Length: 110
Image (tube, rainbow, N blue to C red; front, side, top):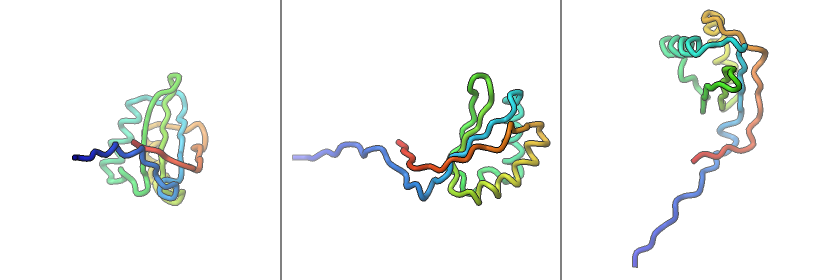
């Protein structure tokens, strides 16, 4: 008689691997074109995909552009920020303040 196994349960990623949720809030006048140009420049310079970046999502919420990321460490985030900020300035993107940085307790993926 053959046996079957159930699908594996949803994986839980160790919080030691993915430690920070970072939420960027550009000023409300940021455009999709500005975001796309930023990504092109980062890719062309070899700065994309940066070490330590686990996840990146860009979206609109209530008409405003938002970016959220998951980083392995604050040090890796800071190192990338040093390369990112001049590109954002050159493209005309201003952040409404410092990004919100939250420690991740648990991350579940499918």
